[in-house]
Image (cartoon, one colour):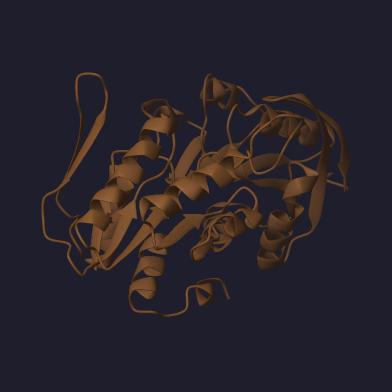
Length: 310
C-alpha cells in the first residue's frame, strides 16, 4: 500500500500517513508557465495498492485536474489498484437538474474520475447519498457523525441538548446524530429565494431553554446557518452551536460566522482551513485523519468499512 497526495490538503494527507505509520509517496505536482499541470511519480508503484488523497476544494477545477492527472499517471505506471480518496467531493451540490437546460455536474465529475483510471472511490459525507450511484466503480461514503458525536460529548453541555437540522433535507443526518446523543430533534423550515441566500420561516419543535446543536454537511456562505442560529435564539434557545463536516466558508463567511449568534462552529479538516478560519475565535477544527486512515487500512486489507459506523 502507498499513499500519495495532491496539493489540496497536504496537511491532512500527512496526518493520515502518521496514523498509518506510512510516509507519503514521492510525487511532483507542478505547473508550467501557462498553469498547465504536470505530474511525475518519483517512485515505483508497479503492482501497488495506491491511495490518492485529494479534496476537490477551492480552486475546485485545479484540484480536480490534479486528481485526474495523478490517477492517469498511476494507471500508466501499472499500479495494481488506484483508490481516489476525496475527503471533500466538489460539485456534489449539482446532483440533479435544478431547472431546464442545466447540467448534472456531479455525474460528469464521477465519469471523469472513473475514466481517468480510478478503481475505487472513498469520500466523506456526500451531499446526497445517491451520488454513490453516479460511479460505476465501488464507492465508500464515510460518515462524520460518530466523530462529531464524540466531540459534542467532550466539549458541549449535554444538559437540555437538542439536535437541529437547518433544513428539511438534512433531517436524516440530524436524526442519526440525535440518536447517538439520545437527544430530541428540531427542524428549521426555510425558504431559499436564490443560491447563497435563505429566509427562515418556522422552527418545528420547541427549543425553549435548549442548548441547540445544528448539524449539516456543508457550510459555504454561512447565510443559512446564521439565519437558523438567529431564529433559534429568538425562539428561546439557551445557545446555538453548529457542527459541519465540510467548511467551504467562501467569501465573507468567516466574518459572518464571527458576528453571528453562534456560540461555536466546529468543522472538520476535509478542506484545508485557511488562516482566517484558524484565527477565528468561534470556529474550531477537528481532524478526520484517524477515520480516513482506518478506512484506508481496512480497504487495503479487504476488511469491512461499514463496521466503523456500527
